Length: 297
Image 1 (cartoon, rainbow, N blue to C red):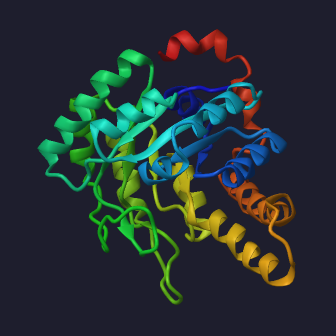
Image 2 (image 1 turned 90 degrees about the vertical axis):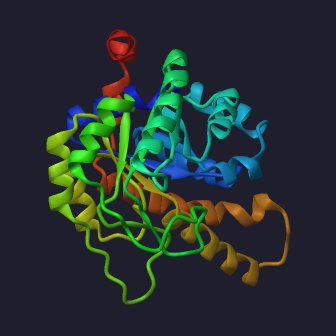
């Protein structure tokens, strides 16, 4: 079942769990996420960065849309960190049900203006819009160039931003970073900032850079009000570490002989994240979506 982010996260927000957004760029990654979601009756978000869209090509997403549309599990197909109106329009043409427009590195007024422009287009097409305020750090070896440090989201700015743009969800900066943290680095999420933002805005909140953070902090963030957690590096690392093992130990080159063990390792991570987000079994909450769909549009 393909739904938009508004429909996905309104349920998560009202029921106190978060939905994982897992970045994919090929069929092995896609299979890892979709089959884990179906096996655990858990809603999931298929996230695609513009560089991943460039790599996978538009035609691949015809299959992705067909596959998740025919599933009994609720899925969102989401553009992650859209960097321009053009990248948003490309995602729309590919059948995405949700987009992110990331103007977080722009001055506040320009971020507002860009986000409003995307919202005006997408809302006419029943496509949800995620925006970002503040900046997520970057640990390198990630798709997002971003910045090395974090500029925390100002709660008062968040309130003004949502009121002016009409964005459906807001990615907030509370201390996470994209990528895998180096050895010895201990991230510390600022829960007081998250609580203050939660008091100012009512839209679902998003946590980017969810990989490699302590489970206890992610769990606490979900309890406070995070409704979507982005995961990329954690499950990809599991897959490609196993791939290195398999290629070292086995002779051969057929993907059907190489990738199954790797996908299984990725599935373990995805399932662990879904458990952490308390989304296991929550697909049942969306089974009557047709009954309340009109209320959310």
